[in-house]
Length: 88
Image (cartoon, helix red, strand yellow):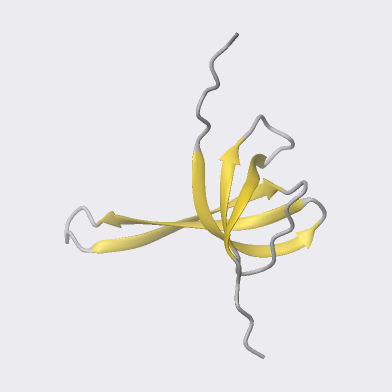
C-alpha cells in the first residue's frame, strides 16, 4: 500500500463564481522588498474546481493541487475556511 502524500495547499479569497464548477481564487502573500526591506503584498489568481462545496464571492477557501483538468485548472477547493458577510 502506498503512503498518502501531502498535496500542496493554498489559502485565498474567492473573486468570481461566474463559471460552472469553477471559481477564481486570489491568493495573497507578503514578501520583503529586496532593496527597501518593507513587506510588500503580491497576489496571484488560480482557477479551482468545485464539486460538492459551493463557495460564494468573498469566501476564504483552502485549495489543494490536483492533476490538470484543463489548460489553466490545476486546483480544487477542499474547504471553506470563512464565509463572507454581506452587508446590505
